[in-house]
Length: 255
Ligand code: ADP
Ligand code: MG
Ligand code: MG
Image (tube, rainbow, N blue to C red; front, side, top):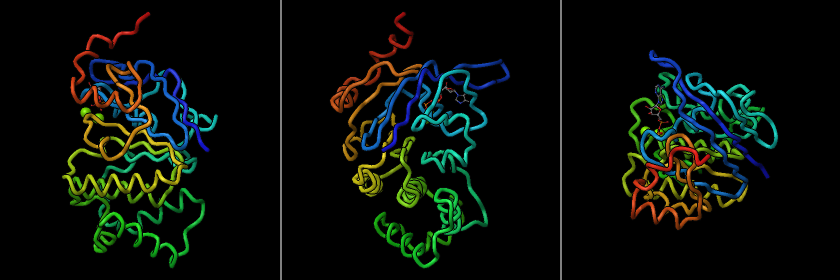
């Protein structure tokens, strides 16, 4: 069992015009076995939330806490966060020429597990997961993210998820740029891993589309840097129908 607690998190960036606050007090608790959808308009700060938890150097946390089983995530290095069981797809968005996917994944697994997986087991593990995600064998030898299509990058994220087996997974816009078939395969990959009941998922998305495949236990509306409403999966249906218009005025705190 694992619990991720986000408490009154404030974070921002420094631009040429000065400090800009983006997250304005985010509160959220995610437990193993739960899927939380974070939904909100573009520019509301959803990606910043995942960057702040990931420890992206551009995003400065100014106050609040992020705790994983009571341990302060914000005090951990990026590697320590991964070892503690946090998975952030945003951590590896870059192209890494000359490093094959299969080497990259083995290095990542070694970092997370604390020891290198035995080669023979590892090759089979990777092959099995790739087959499930309908990823061609040739993919394993390609350089990380180099020339990957949007769909390939997303399948790669889910492949990492399946192999690294984190306690808490944060998936940002996993559905963007996917065609219907890729969306189905990626969703099945997430659902497969969720079926273990051991992972807590934060699924960040602008659209309700992926929620037809991955059923959330909780839906949170994100507007202007904070959660302004929470509910069950019916809230996603309401958003699908009415959009985010009614939340435009709710962005300021009530008090
Ligand atoms: P979302 O993921 O909900 O679309 P983002 O977290 O990407 O929102 O962005 C939230 C707001 O913060 C936007 O107004 C965006 O322009 C701004 N922002 C995000 N990252 C930066 C940055 N590195 N520098 C300046 N502004 C940023
Ligand atoms: Mg955006
Ligand atoms: Mg975003």
